[in-house]
Image (cartoon, rainbow over all chains, first blue to last red; front, side, top):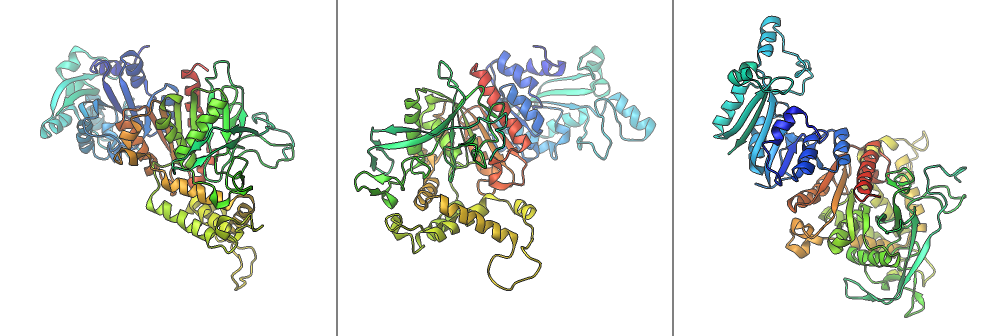
Length: 198
Length: 382
């Protein structure tokens, strides 16, 4: 079983036999790996009907839920890790959801497209239009990504909330880490990945 | 008449009767010395008897869930859309059992049966039956059929309550519980609707304290009122709007109080039909079983604590415009299951059909239900 490389990076941050909640779990690739390869107890939240069916086919516990309504199904401290891949920028209040993630979980793992990526900056500067790319394939008016942020923005939010960043990495669009992304993450990293705790 | 039985139908089926002579002590303290349950089965029981699925019916349901009783039948069983070869509950894989609950009026012992003590119909002397009593009687039917553990217990509405009750009453006897359009207990509003329905029946002059059969009559008007009211609660505003709007039977306004709007005719027709085919005492009994259902009350009103006894996995499904048992009611079950660390999948199906949606083959609902039942078959290696 091979995982998409960003999910493979995430799974390394998750302890075997732990409890994991995946927000916007999609077709359940990460949860399937964690359930069957790392014996984790997993729940996924998802809103797309076809993705829910895919999760059911994989034998996963998936709850239909809109992340904009917070994590009310879960009690405080009910799981070890709450994961959210590529959804932070698409919810109405990322800051409140981040609070809720750390209410429910001891740790949160978050990935999002870094709007400070050099190509995005170049696109805006040269074309004077909202950037579109393989990672950001939408028009400004129909994009689900309503709260784009940069690597710096997210770290500022963590600082304001007095969260501890346990791990961070940035990767390029093929989800590979390199020396250059490590040196200039906000400029050269296309996708930011964080592990935080309160 | 079905001109041809469709290929994905279970075909012509024959109800069977199981008789039980071991007394059944009911929650109320009363005892049924002997009773019978009428049931149907679809598909084949496998050699190790591991592929059985129990279907629990809702308020007005019965044992005829799928297929036809004869080639003259106009309609198939009430859940034919979901039970059959290749359907969500695939009879190529599962052995499906559907019964009429105790207290029913379709062949299982109930108020219209003869009371052996008096030689006359029980009428209102038939003891009140609660959901746990149904589960007990269903477990005895499972024993009778040699089934130790169900692959799944499945039900919608009041049937979902039985599926939920199974998970804590006989946790070791089911692998999966499927709870559709249900609730962990009735709200005050739900109980109020039931009380209005019961009052309509009991105030009917033909009711005779529930002994109408002795008087060779039926409280038809009361039962009709009850059904008309209940029927409203099964539909959504949108569904009624779409089906009837403000359509009238004639172009001229009549200025009288007989049914003029199509929705009125429809309700009258439904009520009338029901009042001649359903037993009023059964109706009273079923609504009371609904009202009393509250498994968490024995666990300090903590549903999570109550469900922590379950050993099965759960599928919970709700429908967006169901206002009788709204999605929030299903989510109470989901939240409690999560808190109790149970495996649960939950879907909130978009539908304009109200509570009735659970009987309608809405594509998204069927696809999810099929996927889940396939998972059941796969995990149990059926």
